[in-house]
Image (cartoon, rainbow, N blue to C red; front, top):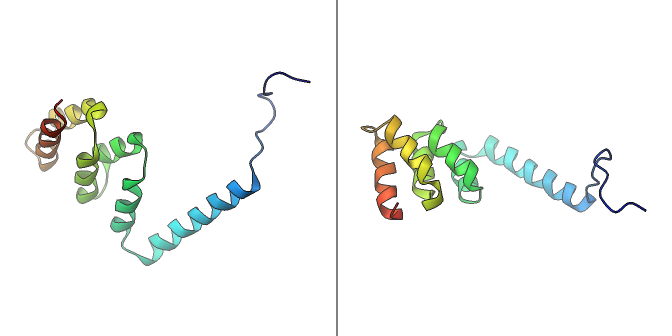
Amino acid sequence: MACCDDPTKPKKIDRRDLIRCQERYDKLVRDLFTEDPEQVIFKLLSDTSSYLTELAALNAHHASVRLRAINLLEKPSSSVLERIINKEPDSVFGQAAKARMEQCGA
């Protein structure tokens, strides 16, 4: 009897979790094919991790998605806001990052 997980053995996934992941993926693909991709990204952005929100704030393809991501950033993401301000001080994104920094009190 082992006391710890064996790293050489693949982790077993609960079949229900696998089915949920497949359904979520299928819905995402369906939405991307049938809806405005920008709107789909907005939906995803509201439920995503702070890392992905920061990534979107820095590099999103759609300007509106990038602005929304900047507005979703919280105080722990102040370094990302500072990067945007330093990289693009006169752009719309730099101004949005400055405004968000002031709102967060950072």
